[in-house]
Amino acid sequence: MHQTRIFFVACFLFATVFTQDNADKITSLPGQPKNVSYNQYAGYITVDAKNDRKLFYWFVEAATEADSKPWVLWQTGGPGCSSLLGLLLETGPFTPSPGGESLYENPYSWNLLANMLYVESPAGVGFSSSKVKSDYTVGDARTATDLIQFLTLFLAKYPKYMKRPFYLAGESYGGHYIPNLALAITRVNLIINFQGFLVGNPWTYPKFDNNGSTLFWFSHGLMTIEEFSAINAHCNFSQSGPFLKYPDTYNMDKICLKTLNNVDKILNIISPYDIYDDMCMRMGGYEGMRLHQYLSNQPTKLSNDNPCGTEDIYAYLNRPDVQKAIHADEIEWTMCSEKLDYSINDLITPMKKVWKQLLPYHKELKFLVYSGDVDAAVPWLGTLLWIKDLEKDGTINLVEDWNPWYGSTVQVGGFTLQYDKMTFKTVRDAGHQVPSSQPRRAYDMLNDFLNLP
Figure 1 (cartoon, rainbow, N blue to C red):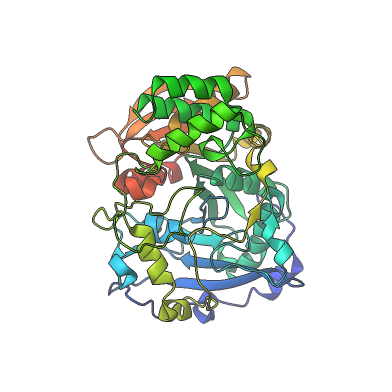
Figure 2 (cartoon, rainbow, N blue to C red):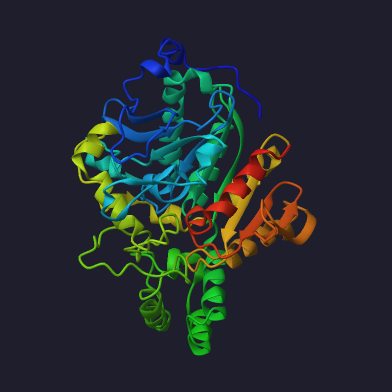
């Protein structure tokens, strides 16, 4: 995309700080496989000096040809869940062994294709923090503003990335984080070679996402036809959050609430984020690790189909030697923040307006929306509905109808719709966290995206 010409003077004051002399460089990562030749950096960047509001990052340079490959900022959703989930469970080079004693190598790590930056955002998530408690009451606007400040200071510290092709990536509530940050980047004075974004199973438009959830639940045998009819008759899809309900959103219809509570009993005994994967059955698991409201143990297929992946991440990141190695504060790291008070109004606000402001940049930016097709949380059906809504009002035009895509194998990777301004892809047999469920297909998808003209 265009590179804006004005940059904060402060950035150039830092330009002599070379990455090889950076105090944030990880010199020895506990449990790391041998013969790792690429650099990793981790630490804090303060985005508000007055409140000491600081965001924790972990930067993994590309395994080969790091000086010529693009860089990608990854954001996990929630809202309020750590991007280190993406690093250690999905797109990063390692995933913890059972109990967090060591690290396994991920053969489909995204750092084989790009330099990967993981930021725990907003403050209050993971290792990121503030000295002012009120900072933990936050919404989409300040989350994007803080990340703009983060990028400004990050580029001051790593100036060689200023002109390198830059992308955003994320999932789940990244459906808010990523488009909002993308729009903010187009509007600020920042020297950055922004090229676009990809976002997976994105929470975007409650009316359609919730409708897609109920369609998916019913069509996959997770509710009865009577429950399906009751939800459609009595639930207000536009005024509710993930899984159709969210604390204090509004006074829900009693029949709607009763029906959803019945459906919850089913969703709580399987993994709603990958309905064909197993649940973690270890005793004494850490109950606070969750995504959205229900998840306590999200499966992973990166370490021998280990369904207790989040327990292992929790164990690993709370090791004192690990926290020292990654220059993190000595605090209890959690998967999703219990202290964050994220705006419910933002959560139920449709992102259509933001998309309509972004899509005119389609000649300069690439946009990919992808969906794992066995996710019951933010199913592909809901995503398809809001994309079709954009098509219906003429915002986007269909160029190529429903077709299979293959990636690097002879097996179908999923299906795709090609529009003039964006692309939609499903990923076959993938859950909410596509790179965890189908690492090879996710790798192929990223490779294709980065190489699009």
